[in-house]
Length: 433
Ligand SMILES: NC(=O)C1=CN([C@@H]2O[C@H](COP(=O)(O)OP(=O)(O)OC[C@H]3O[C@@H](n4cnc5c(N)ncnc54)[C@H](OP(=O)(O)O)[C@@H]3O)[C@@H](O)[C@H]2O)C=CC1
Ligand SMILES: N[C@@H](CC=O)C(=O)O
Ligand code: NA
Image 1 (tube, rainbow, N blue to C red):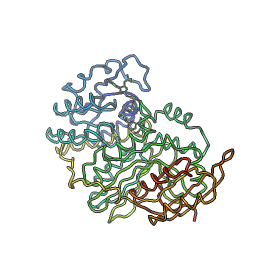
Image 2: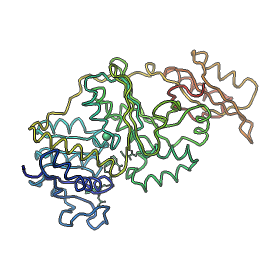
Image 3: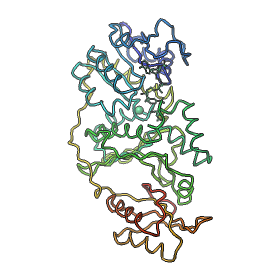
Image 4: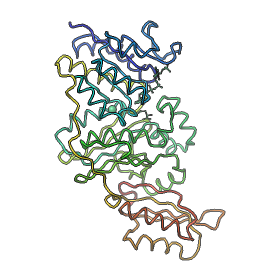
């Protein structure tokens, strides 16, 4: 039996605690798979006296990162502390000290992933990050290994558990947004700063990582158009339900030849779409390949043990490579130059809710703007706004270019009869026919 593999953890919070539990509780399976025991050598935390959700001997705890990244007895560094700039320095040091790294940190990998993977390869080290996208779902290995032979053209995902949990409770139970956000934080789903969840940035980071791997193109965070869920109202959810749609925060990546678009936005999904039934903190990624067709990966996207499962599975991957002597050889550099679609190359349907002065001909003025650009409606609802002289108009358009739609929106805002544009979201699929 070769010597045991020693692991050093940076962080012992929601995910780190799960990692320690899995290593301890699944020791027999881990040893059988990799041919030696796995031991947690050192764990770095911020507050040494904090009460932990896991048993760990005090001599293993430290507040000094050097005790892991410079520890000659540590073979693999597991980074589950979060943060970006200082964490990047820690991981660079670990890699240059010939230590393999497993991370769950999508904030870091979305911005510095390309640099870190290059340094890992230069030092013959593995850098694995399965847990950084969709928590416990093995989506990155699914793309890199399972679908390696295919040309991926479309990926649509619910990749943030916090916002899916919020939208599920608001839609199904009529819960208040603030109340459900607080519950998601208490359950450990949300980031330390939950604005990255609800503002869409967490999902955007994951889509940048997914699109880079899936399209073999270096997609930066700045390439992702982002709109969060903070403006989604009870009325939007009700109208969507009435029209046969479910509102989800959808990460969307589409490749049309060499042109790609990547976005995160609240989206009306037809109730018949497989993603529409993905509820609570669950994630799912729908992947379309030219040869394989439609596939979907589903599971818990957040939470201690589900995320830790992905982290420890990456650790197993490192250890298997150690036995084969092939560490540092799995990173695939992007094959294609990045070419982002222009606004007139992006097409989708739209949900639009506006308030107009309830005057004769108001609706006709509105439809003229759309028909002048050849845009017709799939659904139309018009209702008076109680207690006012306004009417509420809700439409679902047929497919139109983003360029035309944005110009129509601007013209609508300039129309005297339009009081205001209340909401506008992307629509995927056909609702109630
Ligand atoms: N929670 C989830 O469901 C998921 C989280 N992730 C990612 O996993 C990572 C960890 O998330 P999570 O476990 O929820 O975060 P937590 O906030 O629960 O835990 C963070 C841990 O890191 C420690 N830590 C933070 N900063 C420092 C520092 N400067 N020096 C030393 N220790 C530090 C904290 O110490 P102390 O305990 O003493 O405060 C804590 O133990 C993040 O990158 C997150 O985005 C990915 C997928 C899912
Ligand atoms: N805050 C994130 C945690 C996992 O990445 C989420 O809600 O998905
Ligand atoms: Na994953």
